[in-house]
Length: 278
Ligand SMILES: NC(=O)c1ccc[n+]([C@@H]2O[C@H](COP(=O)([O-])OP(=O)(O)OC[C@H]3O[C@@H](n4cnc5c(N)ncnc54)[C@H](OP(=O)(O)O)[C@@H]3O)[C@@H](O)[C@H]2O)c1
Image 1: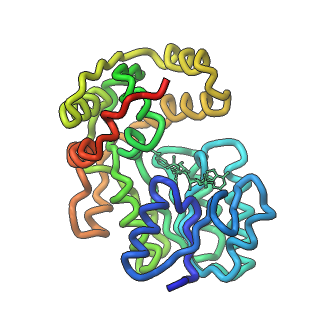
Image 2: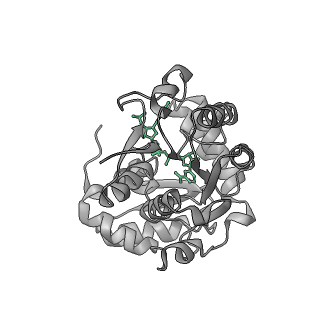
């Protein structure tokens, strides 16, 4: 059944899973993305009205990150438009410990639209659907801060929380913090992926400066290098991020998924045993 629910970033890591969760409930949400029809592009406001027209509830994931220059203005404009078009509820995906993301949260919170903020720590799926996949496939993982404790969270858990609060108004006005059930390090992760995928993986604990220099040598665009450096230097090391929060359990009445379970499931798909394209 077509619905008045919109998922912006509905083909991304959490958005795709929110769409699946809604479909399992018989709801066919509209997807907001450049490849959707109608197309929605954060960089082209002219595309926004068609996507938001007739929508009552929406899950918003910004790309690439609420911390990048221009994100706050985009969230401001989108929220304004949403209110004008009669959107009744917004669920915003935010990042834990990001000052810039909190500024975006405040825009939604002060908009007069019903809202729930879902504030997430780093996703497990960064290792299988994003920037940490390539080093895994190469077998050589060089990262800074190998011993920093991080409560990696599973995108399936985030999506289940997001789709629940999107439909259930009893969570209106709340900031929900989604973390995994344990604090783990990059070294722990490499061990778990190595064991579950039966691969030899070498981990090199390098400095942030070496990591940034490596990205520049690989001609990664400057704005991406800036974002990754920011995430490592401000988000990863923020003591407020090195905490396990039990909101997933509170909302879903079950425990959050441990990284090992994600690794076991992901290893079975064979994604970590692919040959890296030259
Ligand atoms: N990854 C993490 O560990 C993490 C942790 C905490 C918070 N977050 C937050 O989660 C949000 C999403 O990050 P993510 O890395 O997980 O990304 P993602 O959701 O996987 O992003 C991909 C989605 O964004 C769409 N997209 C990309 N560029 C777009 C554009 N210019 N206009 C419209 N849609 C666009 C893509 O569809 P098309 O290609 O079809 O446009 C796709 O649906 C960010 O705000 C980030 O701060 C991420």
